[in-house]
Image (cartoon, rainbow, N blue to C red):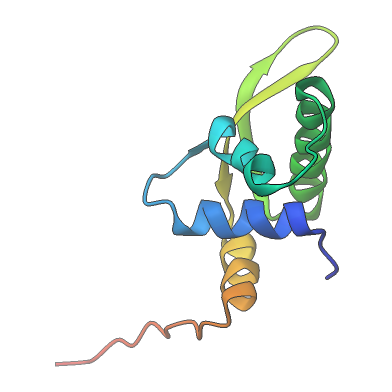
Amino acid sequence: MTLSKLQKYILKTTLQNNKLRVSRIILEKFYANTKKPPNQKIRANIITKSIERLIAKGLLVGFGEKTQHKLFITQVRLTQQGKKEAQLLFGRQAKLPFRFKT
């Protein structure tokens, strides 16, 4: 599955964060280290499109408000498939759920 740098950043930060849901403000820190970041409105549109595409792939679940014409995503959470994909990005090996019979 091909992902952009921003999408990889979103998956990694949501996996690293200990909270169940990750705020959109944390995701905007992607542009903190760039030399010429786009202006605030364009950044919001780029992040929204990336989140919507990850939701369409089944890697994220979005939380927010829905109006008659538009959906405002304020928080995101990883799905099980998203956790596996994020762990592959880190290069970690997933732990198997061993069950011992006693």
